[in-house]
Length: 216
Image (cartoon, rainbow, N blue to C red; front, top):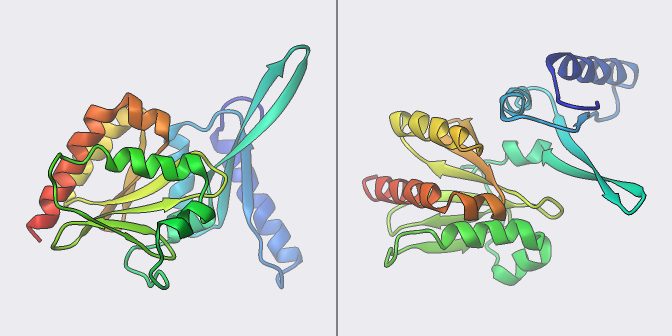
C-alpha cells in the first residue's frame, strides 16, 4: 500500500490470508502487510492481532540516488518476535560470540546502547540464552532482549507492575517509541537512533525496572 497504513489495508490482508489458507489448508500461511508508513497506532493494532493471526508487517521506503529510485524494505513486525516469551524455555545457555554471529550489528547494538544507560554502579548480570538475552539483578530478571538478524531495531520485554506499566507505555508512546502490554510485562521496540535521542527517558525506565526487580 502506498502512503500510510489504514484499517482497510489490515482487513484486506486478513481476508487474503483466510482465502489462501482455506484453498490450501495443508500449508502454513502468513499474512504480510506492506506500507510506506506504519504508525504506532496501527502497529499496536496489528501487534494485538498477531496473537491470533500470524501477521508480518513491512515498511517500505523509496530512496533516490541520482536519477534513480531504490526501494528499501524493513520488517517491523514478525510472527516470532511477539510470541517468544521469557517464561518459555529458550534453549541452552550461549555466549556473546553466539549472538554476534546470529544477530545483526545494529539490532545487537541497540541492546548494548540501552544497557549502557543502566544506573552507574548497578549490580547486574547479562545472560546469553539461545532464544534471548536476559538482564537481571541478584534477584530476578527485569529485561529480555530479542535481537534480530536483518532489522535495525530490537524488541525488549521489561518487568513493570500494572500501574507503572501503563504510565510508561504512555510516556514512551508520547516520545514516538513503540510500547505496549504483553501479558504481565511491557514490550518495547527501539533502534540505536531512538536510544540516543531518548537516552534520559530510557535511563529512567531502566532504573525503575531494576529497582522493582529487587523488590520481588
